[in-house]
Image 1: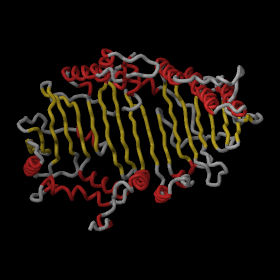
Image 2: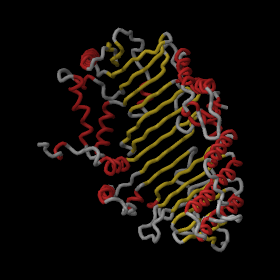
Image 3: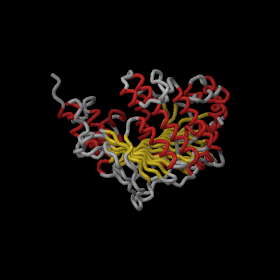
Image 4: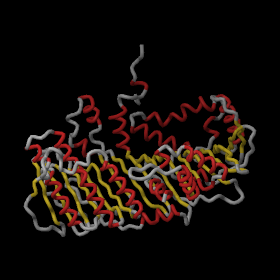
Length: 544
């Protein structure tokens, strides 16, 4: 139970794509850190520099190289700029050993080894650098060379990332495992370590150590890295996780991915105004539903339950609008609103849990520039056990909040609509037997339309994209301070996008947080401009 719960949490953030098995006849690799080739890094740095207004960033490697490698000698010319640089931690006689690998240009191995040794001494590091046919092996002084060539270990990381880390947790020797478990058990009183969850009993020390032991032994490989890809116009942070074949973790991932999405994001009224769009689909085990429901109930039960039957409101059930009309205190009205709002998540959980899956979508559209009420349109769709019953349960809750139910309309394309309106906007609830959509915004009477065939079909688990271009175009910042509004104005014309992906892999999963070049440029212009200067030196005034 404890292990499953911990794996459920880890499942939201990790993922991988290699088998992670040790190679016979070679030291067992425990960890790898790799940096892309100098040639690639130079290109990537130049691209990012152009985005942030300082193209000279691409030349920083060449500018600083003499300071590190020395002005005499070949410098960077002794390095093969087409291969990665990295560090490998391997296991030799049950002890971890560190080896650094620098790719040597043809015939320059000995010279590069001498340069590295001299440079290390300048920084107070005592190392031995040994030249081989293709690599210079760097290691702590006095230690032997146990790996003369990293093989494909560096490429497995650098092929995916500009800079990345790969770990093989299940290969840890027993002595290191024991130290790790003892550290976790000693700190089990910390809620972050013990796994304290609202509504759940804290995990004791032995259980915490056992959960970590199972995770380590079942994790075949873990990879974390940053990828800068000018060709794809993207900067991305990724994590990859792969469980050992046949393990409990592998089974949990396989079970979570066994879902066929039903809910789809509807077509927006204005594609250019879409600020947020995404889908989520995964199987949720019965135990996880129990944890989720218990956690929600624990959160909602804190403080005043506030069900709408408020002290001072008499024996009748009074709505917030009725209480306000009677002149009761704002605190009483707020308690009534709070009580009603607590009912919404409870109703949704009860409607979704019988399906055994979370299958949902969300979309947010910025208001039109000429909108009378400048409120965004928010669309939430869910797969449920009984859409009609959930809609019938939610309509009265909205009415209690002061929304006016409009006359019923005939179903459209199989969807039954319930329109509620208030002076500043409205809510539409659309339902079928298996789905419910809730639409809230500056207008009422929203009607769903869907594309016949999506150009890029959604793949579980999660795909969420935030597009800020709509906010910039629709001038949503008029209320900001003049200085801030001026910074926002500089980002006009850009299409900044941020994307979050969580995808299944055989026996694991991969996450990706990606931003396009316009997003990097926007962040720089709006957030960082007054914090640090990235202008060329020629633009910086004299400091007399």
